[in-house]
Each structure stands twice: as C-alpha cells, then as structure tokens.
Amino acid sequence: MRSICYIPSIDCLVYRSTEYWLGQFAQRSGMPATDVVFPAIVEAEPAYPSRYGQTAARLGQFNWLGQWVQDARHQHPQLRVWAAINPTISSLSNGMIATRDQWNEPMSDTCINHVVVQQMLTQIINELADLQVDGITFDLTDLYPNSTSSRYPKLDQGEQLIQNSCFCTYCIDKFAEISQFQLDPEHFRGKRNITRHILRASDQGATFIELRDSWMDSLDVDSLVRFSAARGFIERDDPHREDDGRQLLCYANARAAVTADAIARLRQTAYHRGLRTAVVLGTAQFDISSGTSMAALVNRSASDEYWSSDAETRVNIREHPLVIFNERRATYAYNALFANLRTLEDPREYSNEADRIGHVISITGAAIEHSPFSSSSCAVLQIIPNIAGIAGIPYTMQDFIEWIRQRHTDRQFPQRRMMLILSHVRNPAPDERRGGAAGRDPFA
Image (cartoon, rainbow, N blue to C red):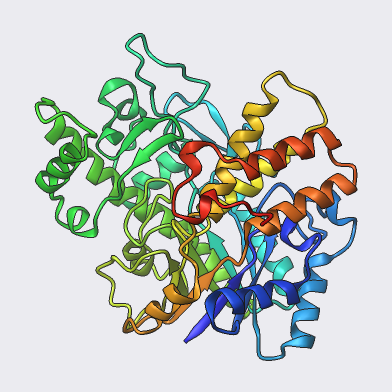
C-alpha cells in the first residue's frame, strides 16, 4: 500500500527540511513514505520562478521547488514526487477572471472554467513538468467558495445570507454546453436560495451537508428533503422544499459535470508531458465547495487518481485508484490555517488584535488538534479492501510554535505579538478544548 506525505504549505519548508517531514510522516503513520507532495502553487506565491509569479519572498528568489525535488530524488530514489496546485490561484485573480457570486460581484479567487485560467494552469503544468516531478495534484476542496460574507450583512431577522459561486459567463456557457442546464443566479438569491437544503449560515461561515450519489443519480428529491429537514436546514412545512430541492439536484449534476470537464482538460496537458494527476477531495460525494464528486470525475476520466477523506461513492474503487486522505475534509482546514498565517505577519496594530489572533489560533487548532492522522487510524485503513493508499499531513502544534518563534527571530512580528500568540496556544478558548489533546499545554 502506498503512503503519501503531503506537505501543505511553503511555510512548512522555510525552517524544516524534507527529511524532517518524511520522518514526521513515518512516525505519525507508522509507515515510511512512498510518495511526497511538495507545495508548488498553493497559496499567494509559487515555490519556483514562474511566468505567473516570483518565488515567495520568505523563500528568497530561488527555485526552491526544483531543489526540493532534486534533494528528494537524491536521498530517496524510489520516492514518487508530486507538485501540488490549488487551481483557485488567488494571487493572479482580477475582475475579469474571478469567480462571481449570484449578484455578479467578483470574488477573490479565479474561476477554473475561464479560458484564461485554463491557459495559465496549462502553462503552470508545463513549468512543473520541466522540474521533473512525477505527478501533479489538484486541490479541489474549496474550488467554489460558498459561505457567508461580510459583503452581505445580516437581515433584519438576524438571518445571514449565503454567498454562492460561480456565476461568471464562462460557467453559464459551460452549463449550457455540457448539461443543457440553464444556470440562473436568481435561484440562489434571497430566502429561496436553493442551496438552503445543504448550506446554513453559522458563526464559522456555513454548516453544510453533502449530496449523496444516489440522490443525484435518480433525482431523489424526497430523500434530500427529508434528510435536510431532519438536520434542520429547511423547515418541514417549507412550501417550496420539493421544487427547489429538485432544482438543486439538477444544478449539482450539471456543476459536477462542468467541473470534471475542466479538470479533464488539464489532465490531457499533464498526460502529454508524461505526468500522472490526482485530485484532492474533501469527500467523494458532491461537496458544493468542490463543485464535483468522485463519480462525476471518473465519468469524465478527469484524473489518474482520486484522494478523498472518505470512500462513500458508487464508483468501483477496484478499477479507479482511491487514496484515503487521512484528514477531515483532506486539505481544507490546513489551507485555511496557512492562508490565515499571513494575518499574524501584518505589521500594523489593530484594535481587535487579540480577537483576530484568537481566530487564527482557533483555525490552527481545528486543523491540527482535530486531525485523525495517526498510526492507529492508518493501521485500520490498511486492512480496508481495495484502498490504494493513505495520505496524511504530518504537521503538529509544536511545528506551529516553532514557526512563530522563528518568524519572530526573523523580525516578522514584535515580541509583544509573539507572546500574545503563544498565550492563545497555551490557553485555548473553552470551545477549542475538544478531542482530548486540544487542551494540553503544547510546551509540556
């Protein structure tokens, strides 16, 4: 069975070596790594000099990704080396290629269906092929943000509206081309937003449920409505629950096909350069933030491998390699963690600094302390039939603390802020003391 060490961020390799992470992975999983995934373009900047961006400033102007690949091959000749891409590439987004919400407002990420974004990703794949990687992973865990937004304040009754994506002209045209479904933003506005069956505003942004393959295959509106009502997403006496539920299932089938088609086009580029591809999914079923499912991806032959945090799929995993990503929602929480680390380096003083730092620490805790990745969970996964491998992220709270101290040493933030950060780590808020280890002193 394959074992995949997934390094989620450039920040992991600023102060720690590849050897360190491979060692951490072996210790946490109980297995030596057969594959390693390096961050190529997963945050604001690439880890190598690209046509579409200079190397991240904290790395210096150097081809670090090329060096990581070379070192890994030299020290571990049998290791399969992957480069990770987050296709949203927010650092390159602008109003012309951005995802757009249901009110046609541009958002912070690019839309994978836009022809220009496809061209950029094609060029990036070719750049990575020149660096002699074996494969490329596409992180689809948050391809289409669907959550609350400060742009749309609460209604008079205290209810917060959900901001959905994407409704750009390229998405609308692709829906018509691939599925004959008319993508109408009006169905996503106001209280009759059809995603209310599976999305509900919360203090953290939004609570969600996935759409099951069986519901989508047979347009099983009754099962969707009953489950949504049981979970408290819709009212049992909602007069529009069935009509809007049917519209949601039709939309989900169309969106899943459109997204799979976009990934399949990128796979062709990788194939012609001799690279394997893998998609990273928070769940094998339809997740509205991923905008697709394993079944839809397989139907379009969109990838060579599928890395998901669960195996709940109608797909025959004997025929299509399924790697279990041994993290909740795969990379989703870690992406949020490392994106929010930039907040800690903001040199400005702000009035709610303690609250903002507390928010970042809560995100960190959600990713690290609630991670299921361990030797015991990996041992269980190894005896489940037909699973091709296990992926995990060997990042701990001690690694986070070391990063804080090193960034202070590098004068990225003052002593006062470092102490405030570490005080939050030492004394997590009551709602962060879950899962046993969350409340322990990381310095002990």
